[in-house]
Length: 275
Image 1 (tube, rainbow, N blue to C red):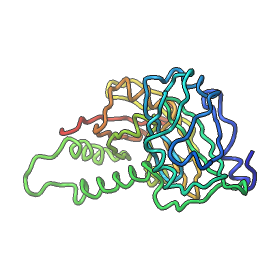
Image 2 (image 1 turned 180 degrees about the vertical axis):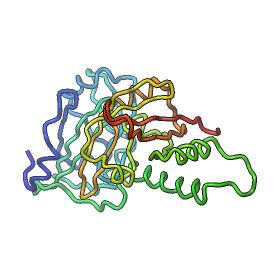
Image 3 (image 1 turned 135 degrees about the horizontal axis):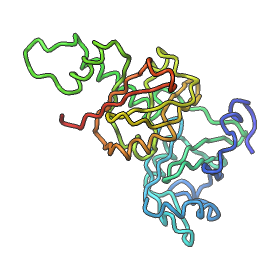
Image 4 (image 1 turned 30 degrees about the horizontal axis):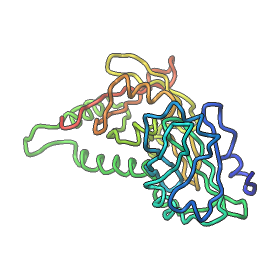
């Protein structure tokens, strides 16, 4: 078991029963494809309809084709896309890779070098989460230059909804649903929003849809290379599927500071693409 920095050991805490792990040592034969240990295949038997895995690391997310997906009688490999993962992470013979399975062929990957210390990577932009936050920031700059349309053109539904919220003086953020939010079953809350409203350290909240129905979700904080991510985890997929959210849908998350009796609450408004 890798040792070294206590923070690394903290991050490698035992996974709950529904999040199982396996590890492998990188070898010359692992550069083009990587075999999933045959003994682990039985945990993937219910995921035979998925032929593409999502590998998440501190550097981002990679979609990798899986051969023999979910069939315990066959060898299973990460294939197309794995070579890109190897190159991006500069993997070398002797490196230890730990894969934590989150279901639906989604894995978090931690990498240790032969000295048993976690490998360090430049944390300039940490995967889809950082990209998503950058997109939110650009949307904010585009949509809110002066909060008005001086040329008389009709405002978009997203603009109209946001102006209503501004008049009500309730904090909110908006985001566009992407493939990561659907496949990996989580949604990142923008860092500035989380800091401004003291959301770090909170463990749960309720999402309230347009019909007034509440959906309990888990809030998770993760420290990676000095960057703290806050995201909506367990419960998000239930909200997403029941409300039939699709890639490209725009969502406005409005913090309801008045809902203290039922804990932290966010009202969610859904705007289909091209609206």
